[in-house]
Length: 141
Image (cartoon, rainbow, N blue to C red):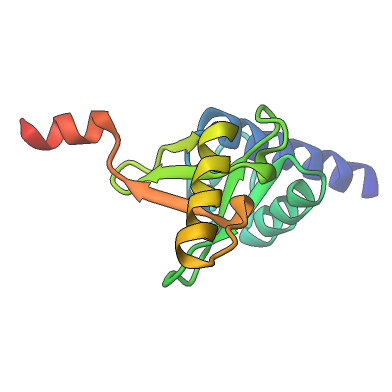
């Protein structure tokens, strides 16, 4: 019986990781992930999703964010972005796409915020919100 349970966990994890990899430019809530993977190749319950998300965060494959004024945690696949917790991100407020901001921009922005406002920015916890070019074009149509 434990062999079946172990296989189940592995298959559930694969389904979750595959979904997150395919949506690596988005931040997703656990509920969104659960609803997307529910009913796929293997039966997955909410507890399994939460447990796997926690483990994937521990291994560094996922980043977990809590945005201001929102009750939910957001998850993003990060294995393809080395040191993803060391740089700043921007996010489209319409489609949710994530942009990984380059170090020179982040350094200049951080120095400007410190000099102008006395605010020391933590790049890993900083998200700039705006509308991406694709969403701006769609709104004009």
